[in-house]
Length: 419
Image 1: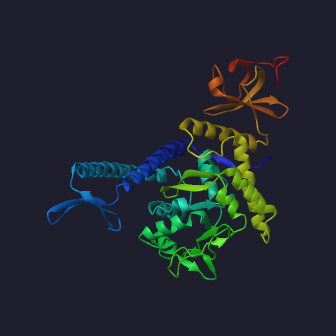
Image 2: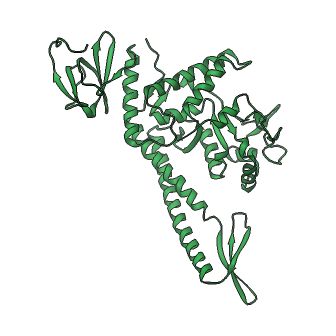
Image 3: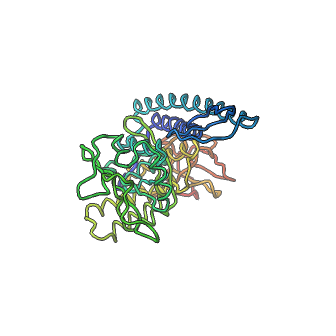
């Protein structure tokens, strides 16, 4: 019997995930708009002159010119824009809190809370573009995008790997210096004050519950500094060079909202699923000094993600699919899980060719009908192509013509029909 490695999310949780991630998308857009109006503007008089001053978050000041029609227009545009952006950000902040409350009530998430807290902190500090989640935790983004739950055994881990992009180190140093924390370790301590740099592993921070955050970087290339500490803080972390991390740095990005067990949400930046599969297979077969137990887990994770890709419920393209696409993916995942549980292989899809199929209906979901056509073969019909929805257990003939199908009740097999 084929092993079931992922199952569809329940209907109530699925609806909440769709709704709450839409709120998160809007909230992050509002946050970005609000950040453009960071600081303030005011008029300052010096002698007989009055001029416009722009202030930043660190109270830095910039003179924009003497009072004139142009500077008055700039002042009015800024103050009105700031008020509008701040009001929208506040309103969506309240909507986000409510969405997160419902997430928890409906058990819509299961990402460890500490991971989402770290992603949120990086996001609010403007540092998230510099880090990519790689390793086991990337599976949470993939299952969220596919509308399924991956088996727990594939997800169990007490550490998260964050890949730092050395190509953007100059911008990173500038961005980090602008933060309140001023160092990556201090930023982690804002999430959990017990985080400390691990003894003899300068790339790792560990908290008092044993959860670790590992920082990786590509092998030294061109003018990459090595070794490199994130900041001038002597206690800060030093990202470690990792084999093939350069390929991960260049891999196509994959960005998707994830939800914690407590309902909180964050956007996760990771790598495209095909790049994940390729890297995990390399770890399983060729990585030097890799413990056998980790090789087995690497191989299992690669196989799970590849199966989701093959089933069409997970795609490499960046961006959020529509509600219609996600509903379709959940429906197909439910069918595939049922068939796998019965030891049946992946079904073939119908509707492309003019053909008829006869046999009992073995599963019906929101978007799909699975039909047993005999000899271990199963076909999958899209409900939107059928003139009526058959019931589970009903034996029918499904006859396609020009992409549409008639569903005809049968009491005995029809000779010549596909079985």
